[in-house]
Image (cartoon, rainbow, N blue to C red; front, side, top):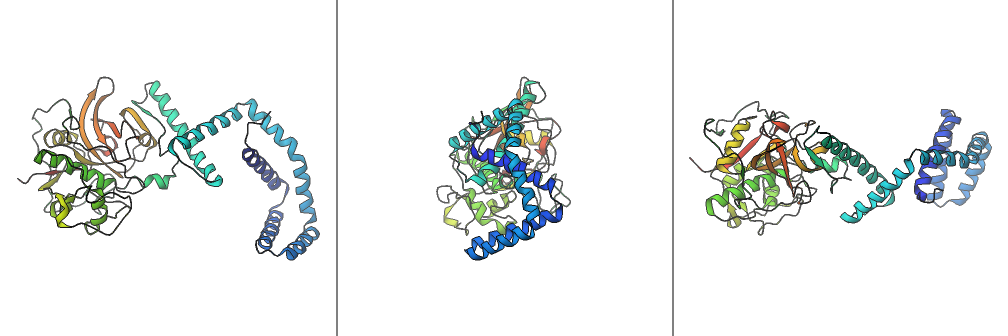
Length: 414
């Protein structure tokens, strides 16, 4: 009846039942004694000392005979207990759910070329299942009109939280709190100034103007800040020269420590570095997704910015003006929620945004006929994430996920 359940699943169920019942029938001091015996047996076996193992086993029988006898009697009863347990699971549909999960997990690994040994496989499958339940819940909420976006599992679905957080590598300056509010201001700091009454286009998409390079993948390196910054510089260069070039995020990862960055462990916007040194072409300084010694040379520097400015924190109208008049703008957002992690389509209106921890590039804005105003946001998690590597984030909804709290852009000198 239960042939379709893999042996390792049966063994895990049996082990759980047996360990639970042993804990019930033994006193704490007896459990400790049993653990000491097993540890001694294990040590003898690993050292290859069979004579001592035999001697220790005889001693254990004499000293802990009552304990071992209770355990043996427990094991003799487990066959019936396990069969009853599995029968209840089948009646409740739990076995079918387990079979479905196993199938989906295998298909997911095959599609993405992922392989794990048995111990790690169980952990990864549990993470996958948890994320699958979240995406299913969000998609139900979308069908019910409670949210305006859909989700789908992607290559992040089996990552631990620690692994995933490596994709969120924006580090805030020491004088900035976790929501983008600056405690002090530098004397040479420049804010973006604009005329709030100036008429702007209802929508704009710099991709359609040929000013945005293809989606890239930062991989397991906390270099989002580098990808976002070079993305803005690529568009800035296109408008100045008429030529779109791919710039090197690896140049930024390797060479901006003296500007307060931490390579693959995060950093901040790097326009000051770009102003002083310039950024190399990707072809001259390719991305490797790990830190190296800085290989920058003045001879390979390709694009500099003459100046740069920050958007007044929280001012979405200023951000809209900057995008419309000057091009893509680097922004810091909260990218931790699983809704964001598994975004697939629609206008993201996440209600569980935390602190600012991820850098992305706003490349346009528009209005959806049902879901309202949105920002077009370029991410650096590869083209299979989101909508071809992009996410449409709600605009004019209270600075959602802090999208206008920490924004900056390269500019020409006045």
